[in-house]
Length: 307
Length: 270
Image (spheres, rainbow over the protein chains, first blue to last red):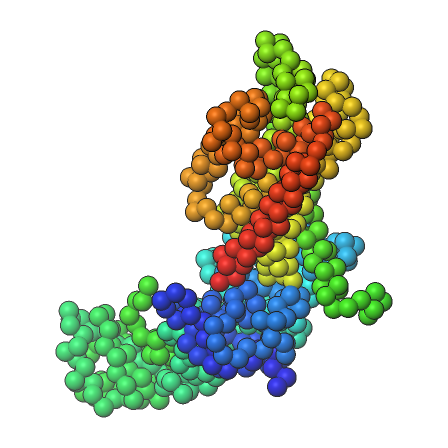
């Protein structure tokens, strides 16, 4: 019961639809925990309930051992929140965005100033301290939002899609900063639909689909449970890849036919490829790779576009 | 130390006051932008009306007789109405246009609500700020009234808190409206409503000149009550009606704050 987040049968309903449909979650101190799922899976609704800005419709929810329905302000005092869409204050400078925000937590002015300077340094924005927010790039704004989430030295940091919409350089910088936080022992909870992000940052994660949790574990364990060790991607020179599916029957655990290629889920990719050649099949291209979280994700949540 | 002694409710109140103040402080930090120019505009408006209509048209009107039998010069009649309506428009512009912009466009309140700050504290903080701004207008205008000999310094001192109360009432009303409107297009309607109040609240002519039905309608509108209160003070004809005015404006403030806080919670804490 020393979980920072403890949810049992947590439900969030809006008029006419159920966004979160009875989930159980436990996040332990020092952990980096991820909510993975396609758009509309219920990740953001869950995050808003954890952030105590959206009351649960039903179920048990304890944050830092407290009840969000009753102790909202006390819980929020110890949370850091980085929302999906930046809501920085465009009428203030970069530094003022931090010092003003600190005041909402009742942090004394002097402490706020010192902490703002530290945090700007941490997210590499010291040179832009007196600039307005408007001209900053997307990556800079996101870093500033993360810095703002840290201004109260939170026990728990919530990050809703922290790198969505950023270019690769900006993403890597954000990841590196988040990894540093994790090393400092800060508990991170993030949502993402980027598999590489989840693999990079999360110790443990849940995959959500349609408001429910469909899988749970470490990235490694999820791959082991829901996919094979390796994947062979075969591409045949034909309009209809499906014609080859029968000929590949029996190789590996599972075969998936896509419009442009066939995926073989196998334990050993090279063995499987040798078997393909033994059957006198000659794909135009063949790629053996390790199974990734993306394979798990697509297997569990399907390839159909939902939104 | 204090927190150990005070009962829980009082501690909660102390925290709420501090958090509301931090919301108002945010606006002070934002003052360094071109925002102060907007404020200057609000200061000039009632002065321009006073000179064009109060003094200009007043020269044609001469003196007018009030329902109570008092006879006053037209500028003396119009000036307190300008004070009340500038308190109204200052409060409304802050709590409708600016408040809505912060809520929907800048989404500032989403950021604030991720902190210990609660919706009602945002409402209180923004209202206090609107009042701070309105008070500057009112004080400046009262100085002008005293300098033009339209009221006495003692009455001006008493009219000041009355003008602040008027601001509170309209600020709370504006905030409620902001939580109810759908988009920018609705601001035209607010503007039209505000202008109608400005013209027909006993501002330029006594309400007694209207036919009974219209007069009754005018007398229940908030700006009429505000004008009645401020005018009663500034020309020295205070009576029991002004107690009614004060109660009316207090009720409006309380109801507005309560509804605005609830609506904000509904809108932002879904």
